[in-house]
Length: 102
Image (tube, rainbow, N blue to C red; front, side):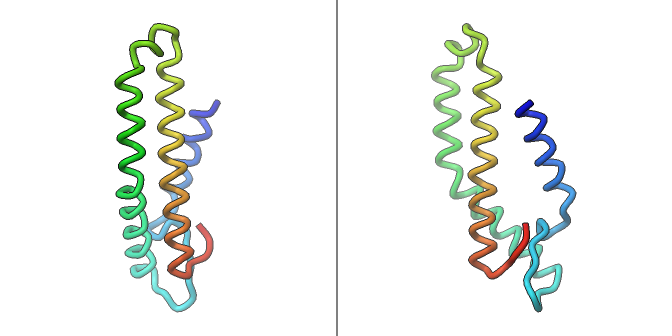
């Protein structure tokens, strides 16, 4: 169920063009798209350390989790967590730039 919700969220985000649904008075769509791309890149860079830690944990504990049948659930949990962190960072960045929506 959680994977289905994550997929639905991902598809809805992909449906938003260029600026990710963010709006700011007096800003054209190209500038909004550039600001959004900048925020997404910043979020990916900021999240890289935490994602790397998650990957290390999966590599270390993967065999244990596979043995008890929860490996895919753990992978999904980490992927959901990474996506949420990045989304929060993008939201914060765009709001700091004066945008609304998302």
